View 1 (cartoon, rainbow, N blue to C red):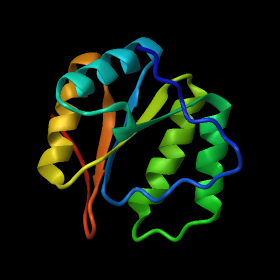
View 2 (view 1 turned 30 degrees about the vertical axis):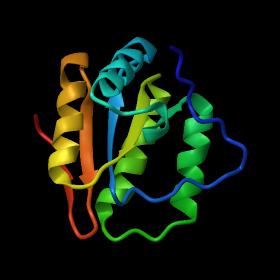
View 3 (view 1 turned 90 degrees about the horizontal axis):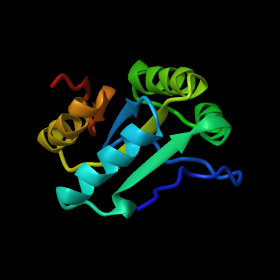
View 4 (view 1 turned 45 degrees about the vertical axis):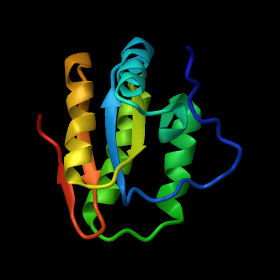
Length: 129
């Protein structure tokens, strides 16, 4: 099953609160991660993939039009832009709490997923698994 990255049509991404966001090195790793998410009960509508120039443009626009609670949000955008410029992908998944974020990051670890960060209502935290 093919999952496609979000296309930039001039829209603005929603903020990171309530999400876990991380990075995968390529399309093969993303496909394997999406398969793992699906096997764990997630549907394709539960996650967003950013890749390439479209992803960079979406992040740049988000940076310009959002107020963030802490530096973590700005940092994940800057890191995301760097990762996209390296040909990597970004995945964003809505979560209910920190434990949920840890479970998702654990699915990505065997696929060299990295830099996963949980954005809660009042706390942002790098996930180490």
